Length: 75
Image (tube, rainbow, N blue to C red):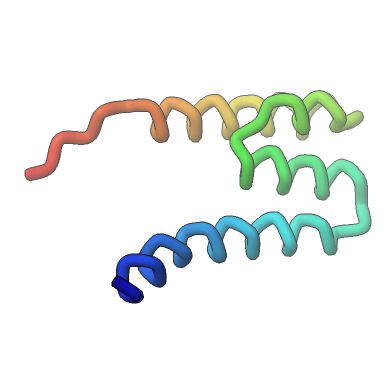
């Protein structure tokens, strides 16, 4: 029973670690870029003031959303 609980928590700890690393960045544009890519949220991309970085952010987030939502058959 205990091993099922431990296996379940590993992805949660990895996700929290990514967001924690993003929160340590002090430059606002880079921080929002990191948060958007980590959470796959376009809302964080909208907070970026540099238009080139914003378009890159939106592209990466949309690509990540497509990867997460697509069906990958096992071989």
